[in-house]
Each structure stands twice: as structure tokens, then as C-alpha cells.
Length: 289
Image (tube, rainbow, N blue to C red):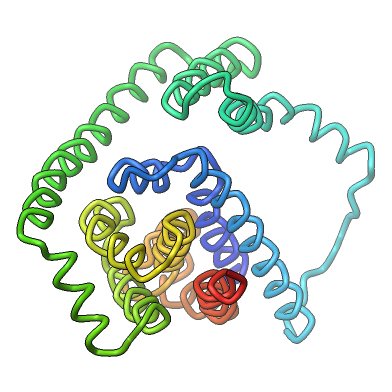
């Protein structure tokens, strides 16, 4: 049970990477980086993360004494039935990415299209959404958006103060004078992001740190899309690490008989693989330049 909860908590982090991603949308807004390119990078990094975590599950279960018992094998007809039932839902990200990369609409317009599409499918086809549910969703979404937009507005002032005082230029000179270079700087940023990701939620960290960290990385020769992918993956990795791994607490709420510490302990294979992937995503593209 604990490992099942750990899988749910870990796989849930990948949803932040796969478009449409609020984290990449925020990063693009705060740094004037192409959201479409960030979405594409997120799809690639998310796929890498999925493969890495699947490998972790495979080897953990190979070496574990507590092996799952496969009581009933699913048939090809059951797989086909499940695909047919979920097809319209799975079509949403395809419509979003297809529309953006074919030039039919912008990322902002894609968000509107996906919302309208999801409402129509959920209310009239799956019939799992009532008008009352829809109203509650609008209210909750408004509250969340209000908080994020307020933080974004304040951070724009903060970014202006940073730019006016030449903080980025000063920090770039400091990094250069210390002889850290791009590789050393990426290491320091990853450590800072890892610590922040353990303690805070992803959006506030992006809003507060991206306008400072990215210009220095760009001045040192790093691609902004690569930096955005690295930053978001690092931060969502913090969602399963103690002491405040948000996804682990969510998994705990659905399995109340399991202590949070037990689920954290079951996440150990994912800690190792996730840490390796942070390093690979950070440094491999630098070597391939």
C-alpha cells in the first residue's frame, strides 16, 4: 500500500510538466520566454521523467520481497474499451498542442479552447459535471487565479527594482569573478531550487526567483528554454521530498491508515532516480551544445 501511494505521489508530479502547464506558463510570463517552446520542452522532460520513474518501479519490484500478486490479467478488449471511454478526455492536450504548433491559436487562446472543450465533454458526454459543480469550480479557480495574479503583479515591481539597481549584472560579475562558470552556477541554482521546492509550492518560487536566476544563466550562455525545463523539473521533484512534500500529503489523505513517514520511506527509489534526472536534465544539454 505504501509503495502504491508513493507511485501516485511521484507520478502526480509529471502532470506539472506535461502541457498545458501552469508552471511553464508562469515561467514564460515572468521571463518573456516562448510558452509554446516551454510546452514542447515540458513534454520532452515529462516523458524522460516518466521513463525514469518506470525504471525505478521495475527494479524496485524486482528486488522487493513484497511482490504484487497479479490476480487477473486484463485483456486487449478491456484495454480497447478503456481507451474508447477515455478518448475524448485524452484528446484535450492534443487539441491544445496541435492548435498552438499549427498556428491556429496562441497559448492563451488554447487555454480558453481547452476549458470550453472540457466543460462540453464533462457536462454533455460524460455527464459527470453539473451546473452547481461548474459554479463551484469557477469560484475556486477565481480564488487561485487571484492569488497567482497578485503575486505576479507584485513580482513585476520586484523585477523592475532588480533591473533598475543592476542586481543581475552585479551577480553575473560575482559568479564570473568567483570562477564558477555556467556549470558551477547551474549547480548552485539547483541546490537552492531543491531546498525551496522542499519548503514551498512551485508557482511562488518561479515568480520570485526566475527573473533573477534566468538572466544570469543566459549571460553565462545557457538557453532560456533549457533553464526553464530544468527549473520546473527541479521544483516538482521537491513535491515528493520531505519535510513538506505536497504530493505525499495528498497521497496520505487518500490512504489515511498510512502515516506520511511511511509513504516518504516508500518514495526512496524515486528520490534516487529523480535526483539523477535533475542532474541529467541540467547538464546533458550543456555538453551537447
